[in-house]
Image (cartoon, rainbow, N blue to C red; front, side):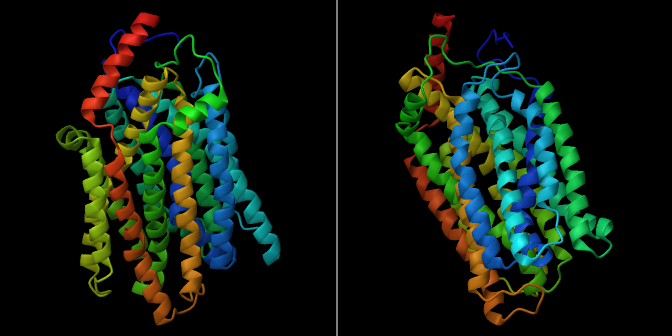
Length: 455
């Protein structure tokens, strides 16, 4: 724990980068199930209406977003022999695994009883996810002080995150069929047992293969009020706050609509897994070139261009005929490839805002910066998830029946024009983000000098 880098620009080992990235593999066994299948599970398996499910997802996720900053403050003030953030990977691995299984369990209750059960398990699930994922995200900000190296770590992280997305998207429905033998309730429960057990192991691997190296200034006095004031005066972080809301709204609406699109509009639910997996493979390829593109254009410009192109392509998706399956897949693959680098870019940018905060205030609150980042993203996720349920209800969706033309057109809009509007807002917001590569180089040099003087 006391080891530090002899050279501030020293690279992390590939082993540590992979070890850190496996933590997001673990997280995405939960996140991707929520993103792609939880609404479908509630409407078509669990047995509650789309409107009720949408409201429930909003309520439980809004509550969860409120505890993100609290978790960040707690993590910043945690002091153990393992560091501030790593311990939570060990402490919370098993609890989140158990709660994850309960969330995808269908109890033998009345409709009202099921709604209460869903509220309770969803609330607990979100709290457990926050308790492990907020410290995990903050850990990236203290693995290394080097901005470019963080982009590399973030790329490893999201390549490995997409591995879990690939597994969840490609195997969930087959596993549900395998375990359930036609009973989707049993199938979803046992599928989540497999995913949760895997996630527990991966969280522990991350714990044992990472190290915290960047620490707050030795004379820093902790004050929640001061930390919050610093955060609110951190203008680059405020820009990322709104970008996170827009970006996650896009992802939540579009991802949550895919299974409905194929089951009720295309008329072939089996294509859902192949569609999701093809997009994930393309996204992985996009993530793998993030560092090279970032060197070429810089994180800020690259992020803006990517979201602009993605939004325009997503709008065009609406006009693809349902009979042209090849073009539907090709369009999705292209969108996913271009969207891929946005994930590692945004988290590397969050780490930069933590440095910026320390640079202008002399204080470091990495946990709060990252918890507030997940707060914004979860808020976008909550809004997107709720609107997905509400839009389905608005367009006249009824589970497990042939949909009206209005409902089918609505599902098409939810795969294209509606999320694209959020994407355009994300692209526009980046214009106000000022931490380009030149400024980050200056910040890095200044902070390195301060730390050497304080050592």
